[in-house]
Image (cartoon, rainbow, N blue to C red; front, side, top):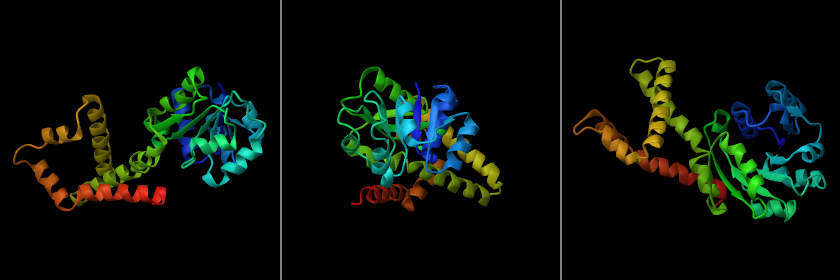
Amino acid sequence: MKVGFIGVGAMAKAIIRGMVRANLVPSADILVHSAHKENYETFATELSLTPVATNKQLAADSDILVLAVVPGVVKQVITEIDGSISKETTVVSIVSGLSLSRIEELTSYNQPILRTLPNVNSAYGQGMTAVIANENLTGNSLKQALSIFESTGQTIELPESQFANFSAISGSAVAYVDFFIDALSRAGVKYGFTKEVATKIATQTTLGSASSLLESGKSPAEVIDEVCSPGGDTIAGILAMEEKGFLPAVVHGIDATIKKSTGN
């Protein structure tokens, strides 16, 4: 299975690093090309990938073709590779806002297509990716396409109408969670820790809390209630955060992200 990437930006690099980390396919079977030769050739050398000189050649050589370009050049790129994509090739899009119907319109209504929204945690095998396939992508071809994102984390099938909402609480939320960790770290500095030590403590605590929550199957509210002893320190902190509008602030941030994404 040869997987080709047109576009080698931050998200494509995260997915590729995750694939290599998981040994999904031999590194040489990952093909890369982008508009910036120095960028993709340097990255290919670093991970022993196969750099390809043109988009047309990459499309012709790939069993799975990943579109990882910015939305503004999608039409140009697909026009460029027209005639080089086999009808058996699975086209995978990680392009934000590019619908299945639009990809079909630009390629072929018979083309197997998987639309995805991954996040940058994919580089470390901890990604979260929304997926939806068109009716032409089934059976083993679907399994192979999904295996890319399953090797880099978790996947969830969602209707396209939920993709913008998913992006806010998965893609953008990577930054929001890191923002929270940084806030904990700065509080630690206030009380005498170095920033390095405070960040290590906050990061491991966040990781442990997330892992424990997933494994336990409990709701966040249940765990909060377990940690908050009657009259204790933790409930005092929770109430102080709520008094300053912690929950509304988070929801407001998600609202703003979705509004910006959808233009509504």
